[in-house]
Image (cartoon, rainbow over all chains, first blue to last red):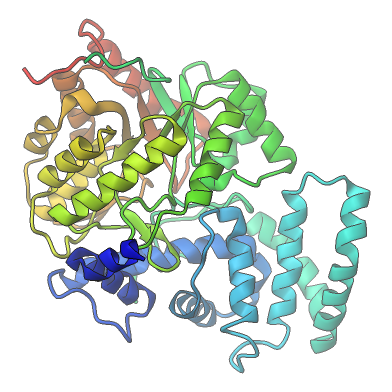
Length: 202
Length: 285
């Protein structure tokens, strides 16, 4: 298509793609040679922190269960290997699910119940923002919930009780990523409060 | 050309879910309008959607988008633009604003990335703005964003902004905190930058706080109180261009509502101090 050809030829288009590629995967793609690395570090942190905060809000139990380094690695992998199509923040959770089911499927680094737990938390959010009447909601969602919880519980028998307590505490504790970010993107799925701290070097 | 009055007036506050309930029960009289991002509300149902609807029926609102990615190296998401139009129409919101930036390549990165300041990029962005304005059936205002690097820079930031606004024939959302942040980060004079902007295109403004990363490096976090040099820039903007509706942005470290109302009050005090000037006049004199 002519429009796509134009995109491919323009220098600024190339630079934009290269810039974004670096932010997605800094270890594989170098930053621009005409921007200081400490400035690129701001972009690298902003991108990761924003999505980390949003997804922590959508999946608070996963956030609490996973050690910080593991969660951080998951977010960075999300950027590197997934292409989120939605412009809507309510759908970011679905993008994360797609990533866990797709590029990250059966990753040996992750706990075996990760996908099922993500589905459980996603369903919770879907129910919160649904306009459906309670009985219709249960009729359509219950089979999926029951199936997911059953599979998830088999992986780790005590996890369902722990998760229930974590869900309750996550709603009140609202732990967020400690690095400052520019959360102009913010999740309305969970209340979000945080404290500033000095920005750590990645 | 005398522009039509902007759909909102006075001093406003970005709507946050943390005080949605409090606002629904007892909206502070000092807030003239609110701002929301359609990306946070499209597809929302349940109690929060009903609360928002109750507010949009009672108060003036502006939409400030986040995901339009007007400068992106990939085609416009026309389905999304139509979703935005439907949202605006559904809530009776006339004003739609966005960022002179991009936030996507083949997928969304959910942050504001710097469009290279080049002539080709001007034409690219301006064409897309015209297309969006046609679909939305209204003019849009683009915000002068903060940026930490300028890859492939072939022209100055001020020239890039002016060229896009002129070729697209769209409006400017003047963010005075971003001018301060960019002036520190890129070593230019904030007041000179401000006065060089095309005043006749300024329809709406933002003010916010930022994070001091280093003496020569600031981060536009919207997570702190507004500092005095930024208040002074707002005052200079009103002096130079006339008063325009202005919003307080606070996205992070959100204090209690009454604290935010006090900052909004300060916007109003500065506006009232300039009340003798005609608001939104073409001010190139």
